[in-house]
Length: 80
Image 1: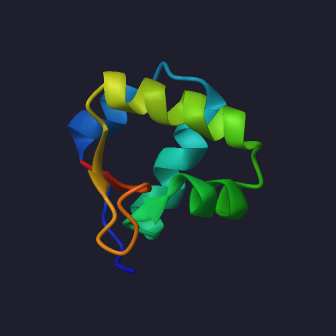
Image 2: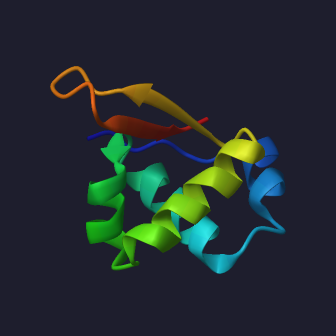
């Protein structure tokens, strides 16, 4: 897992988002390329809350989702 630093544009994009979305973004900043399940485990948030946070982050173009190479049913999320 690699660490990425959030750029100013991404930080501004998430400024008005709920705390759960900010937490998910912060975890992705330090652990790039996590699945929804892994994000739930890292943040200790319920799956539903993580899904909502990811949706809000995607709406702001703050995260990118791609299909997992090991399991095409899963998506891997990275900070933009």
